[in-house]
Image 1: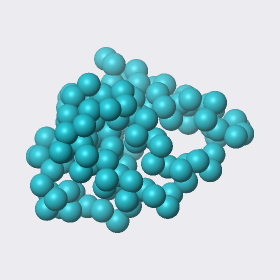
Image 2: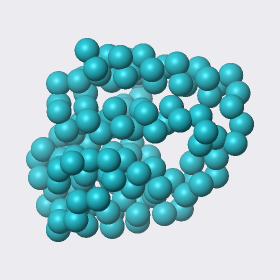
Image 3: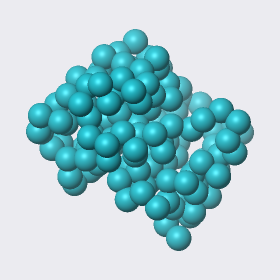
Length: 142
């Protein structure tokens, strides 16, 4: 993990935003963004990894992140990683491709979410999600 004032602020917000959430296998959700952050190699990708689901999965907004003083590059990448309702998944993924910060974090996100060993039960829905994520990885790696 890269520890700077920015990443520490992102770490605290990620924990606060996700502290009561669980993932599909019942594990504390906050482990997921922390796992992604551990794989990042610079300050901005680390911050985005920590914050990547905050706007999509909690009541926090991009405006809240701006008020907290997060840099525009971080806010832009978090915004790209926030899948808006009604937008087809592959359209959403394609929009991420040209932003190097969002792209790096999304690739790590997809790989972690594709790890079926994280799940208690691997059913048809899990296999379908993994196939969808494999296609998304292909798009991002083009």
